[in-house]
Amino acid sequence: MPNSQNIPWKRLTAEGTAIVLSILLAFAIDAWWDEVQTARQQAKLVLALQQDFETTKGRLESSIEKANSLISRTDGFFEAVKSDDPVPIDSIRHLGGGAFYKISFEPALSAYESAVATGRLGLIESPKLLEAITEFNQARENYELHDRMTADIHYLGPVWDMRKKLGSLSVLFDDSSGFPVRVQLTDAEYRQLIVDPIVTGAIEAVATANGSIAANLKEMHEATIAILLELEQLQ
Image (cartoon, rainbow, N blue to C red; front, side, top):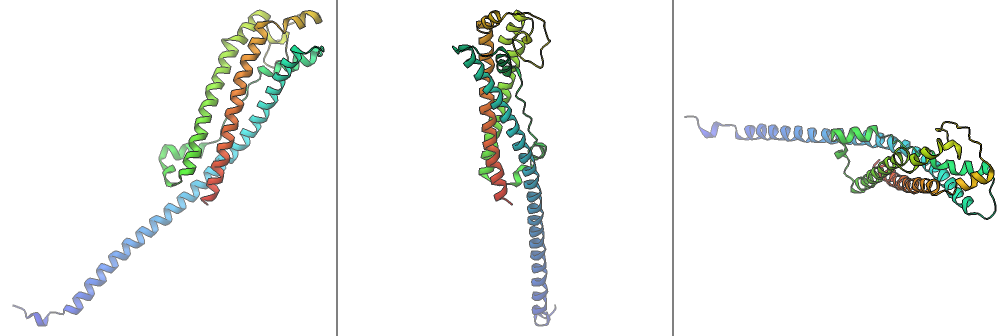
C-alpha cells in the first residue's frame, strides 16, 4: 500500500486546478465568441432592415404624394359640381378623372420578411422596434383592405354601374384605362349628366376609399420613421 506521504499532492492539485481553469477558459472563449457572432449577425440584420425601410419610406412618400394629388382633384370635382360659376368642362373632366386612378404601394421588405420566416428577427431585442413594426403591419393590412375595396367599387360596384350607363368613363372624364367613346354632348347635357346621382355616388364611393388609403399610407410612413429611428439607436 503506497505511503500517502509519497503522493505529490501539491503537483496533482496544481495540475487539476490548471485543467479546471483551462476548461472554464474554453467555455468563456466559446461564450465570448458566440456573443461576437450574435453581435455581428444583429449588426448585419439591422443594416439590412434599414435598407428595407429606407426604400419603403421613399415609396410611401411617392404614394402619399400621388394620393394627395388624386384626392385634391376629386375634392375639386365636387366643388365644381356645386359651384354657381360654371367651371370649364375640360377642367371638370380632369378633376373627376382623379377618382379613377389607382393609388399603388408596394413595400420593399425582403430582408424583414426573411428575418421573420427564419426567426432571426429575434436577434434584435427592442420592444420599441417591435411595437413600431406592429403598427406598420396593422396600417399595411388596412391599406390592403381598402385597396381591395377600391377594386370592388371599380369592377363590381358603383363605378361599374356608371360604366354600364355611360358605356365608358371617357364620356365624362379623363381616364387612362377607359376606352374612348365618341359621344357628342352639349354643354348643358354634360353638366346635367355629371350631377346624376349614379355619377356623383360612384365618385364619392371612390373618394371615401381613397381617403382611407391615404390615411393608411401616412400611418405606415409614421411607423417607418419610428422603425428607422430605433434601428439607428441599435447601431
